Structures are given as structure tokens and as C-alpha cells.
Image (cartoon, rainbow, N blue to C red; front, side):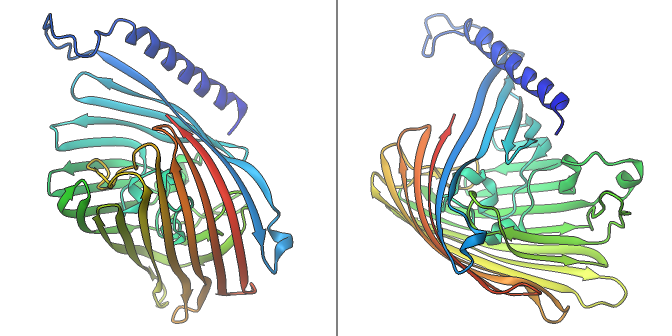
Length: 404
């Protein structure tokens, strides 16, 4: 993003933070009920938000030259949330990572009731258990590779949320992911891809220390932008891939491109069970790309299972808004063991994007409500990728994160 674009965005955030300070100075003290006044339905409340991640990693691999040890700041975000009266909410968040500045969440929301909301703008679309929280909040430190492959990033769209006691539902219509990062001309806009998706969750038990949840998500997408400098965009392909699960060194682990694509559909069942200070979270992913000219459909799969437990601290609690386990309380020490398998190779379609196994163990210490320290060891092995040798990687990495 050009400097001329970044400067106005940062100026806007500074202005919003100033407005927040001005607005809060006149707010009544919490708990003041001596004089009950009429509700000001048009009152504006602005709250600054931010994220800072600092990572360090050591690697051991037969391909060590491709994985240099080091430290980095993989993500910095700054933004504001705003509410107007009882029904309107908005969020603006800008992120900086690897010398790039991108918009993250930029949306407006209308609350019809305590259970139903409608959100429009640039946002993460729910597709399974993992995609309901930010990447920095994953208990595995690095999100499961399957979730990176079979999920999209922020997309411009419209989402309806139904957040009832025993059920959680989302329904979305959205444009393709690259719409938010590319300035498409009129020809590309006419060919812009779109998608539909939904997440359905049943949660018969969700009290502290006892949670049972099962759900399924489905999605349909049309082919996406695949043009570039000096290349005509045909808008008839999909690309999938993920790096090795580390942020210090970015190295492609698996990748496939499916040409002559007609459409894509995918689904993911999810399961979560918690008893006291122990919990398990898991998902399975299946994806099929239907193709033109009589070519066989391309299929890819993945799955992960994560076992987590509070070593020091109290029982897990539930987060109704994201339909998942809430962040453990401050001063909690959490242990995590996770396994992930992902396949982008399909012999029927003769596309070999590679297969990946990843197993990891980690510790998370929740210092206070704003800071978390994480330590992770992982072993990753890839194979069956066209024109790419098998690779193995041992990783020890640490993270200190600050979120407000």
C-alpha cells in the first residue's frame, strides 16, 4: 500500500482516538443510579483497539539453509470500535505485517435484538470452529494448516448472525478475497467472484466447566481473480496453499492451482467437548472444485484435533459470541497438544499440491487480560508435491502478544 494511502488511515485512527477521549470525559460514572436519566439513543462511544505480536524461532531441518533462525514482529494492528445507541456498531482496523499495510476489519453492524445482528463490510466470515477468532488468539500459537488452506481471509460481504442460547447460526454472501486488496478495473469487476456460506452450531451445554458443541459449515464459491502484471485475467481458477507453521520464516509447505474451474463447494463438521479444565476441539475439511471441458473434479481434504488443558487456573468458560471456548482467565497456564493432516494432492485430477503432517505441543501463560506468552514445539513433514522434494522441519518458537 502506498504511503499516501497509509497516512490518511493513521490520521483517521488518531482522530477517532481523540474523539474517544473527548466522549468518555462526559460519560457518567459506572454504577451511578442516584439520578436516572432518559437513554440517549444517538450517543457515540469510541474505543481504541490494538494488537502487537513478537515472535522468535529456532529451526532444525535437513533443509536448514531454507529456515534461518530469527525474530520478527509478524503482526501489528491499530483500530477503533464504535457504537451508536443501542443498535449500531462499527469497527475499523488496519494491520501491518511483513512490510505491507492492509485493511483488516472494516464493517458496520445493526443489532435487531439481543440474538440477531446484520453486519456489512470487510470481515472474517465464519467457516468452522477456528475461523471465528483472530489468528493471534489460536491456542496452538499458529493456526492449524488445514484451516489456513480451506479458509479465506477477510472478505467484503454481508453476514447475518443468530446467537441464541442453544444454537448459533451465521449466513453470509461475500465477494472474493482479493477484492479487498486489489484495485480491480471495470473489466475485472464484471468478473468478480462471489461466495455463499453458513455455519450451524448446536450447543446443548455451555456452562463453566461443562460444554458440548457440534456444528457444520458449508460454502459455495465461483472462480477468482488470477491475473497479474502483463497477464490477462481469465477468472477461471482457484489457488490453495499454506506456509510451514511458523511466522519468523515464511516458506511454502503445500500449494496447488486448479485451472478450468467452474465452481467450488466445501464443508467442515466441527466438534468441541469440555469437562472442567480439559477440552478437545476438532474439525474435518472436504473441498471439491468442479471443472470445465470434461476434466475430473479436484478434491482436497484435511483434519485437525487439539487437546488442551488448564495446568494452573480455573475451569474453562464459554464465549457465546464466537461459539467456542473463551480465553482462559489471567494467571492461567495452559498445555496444548495438536495434530493436523492436510492433503492437496488428488490423483484423479492429476494435481499434486502436496501432503502435510504436523504435530505440536505448547504452553500458554495468560499474564493478564491483555498479555499472553506462548511457547511451541512442532514437527512438520511434507511430501507428494509435484517437482518439490519431501521436507521435514523441527521448530521451537516463542511469542509475546499484547492485545487491547
